[in-house]
Length: 396
Image 1 (cartoon, rainbow, N blue to C red):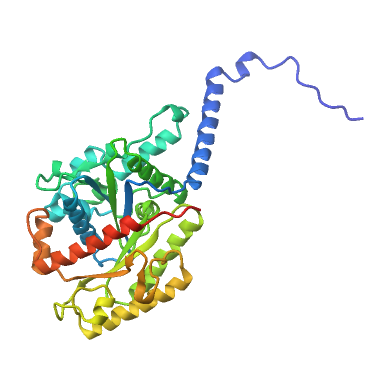
Image 2: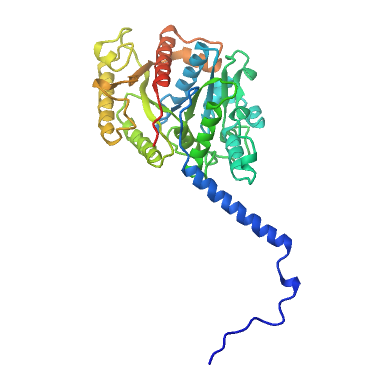
């Protein structure tokens, strides 16, 4: 008969047994693994909640060159000028940092190094949130304050409104002329993060600003890249209450818009976002007559465009109406005839800015737009204000 083998005798010497240091190391490795699993679980369960003093608007379109950055800048400038008590924060979710450079002035040569050196970046905020959530002493640590990673634009551009702020991205500095040697567009922020952890950071940003101890009212405008769905773009969509879609009068835009809507729908189904599309506006339109025709007024325009452009806009509106069948919750604001929903008109338009637009880009807080273009941006800002006031998050 086979006998069960006995334990070796004599027992192993004490020198062969794990030391206290080795046991501690194994314990710490297990603790870190469990903490990461808990963080991932918590991130996937992150839910957006409503804050009375916080509204987040994201300018997004997967097509580049439609005016996301320029429009976000002018809307931010207008909203800050309208109410000195309201804090307007521009979050640069671009790997190129165009809106950061617009705010600082000086065009592409504007130096963003001081912002990065002061840790006023979205990635620094995300790193701090991650470090807190993975620490064993998490419950003993104070919550990460987004305000610590926000810079007041007037500190760098004295003529800017005192209530206008910016949170840039570290990626734009790496990809810029003053960045790390050999850095390229592939080195974008939050590159390896999954949707769940990205949403967790987005909700941490909302919670910090929405629960501001000073009881400030915050309006956050997020600028994104066209044609790129990287981690920063995902965070901007997760953080948003509403999404504003700039578009050209071109039905080809709908193909890229469908891609964005499909991704947003995936975030909603995963419980990682509650954002909907709140406004679509046509940018850079050539004006035929200063007053709007009935058909152009129905498209949210304060002027008349050529018949060919108007027909193309109508076709784009019809394409969006067809998309509403596939994405009814995302395009819920496009209700009623010609897209006039409960939160105001769904469409708007801005005429071509001409030479005055370039002057303002070079001197953002000193130069002035033409009266007509300035009026368009004032109307658009009023639409945005109505959208921010009317929008309420849905809970899942």
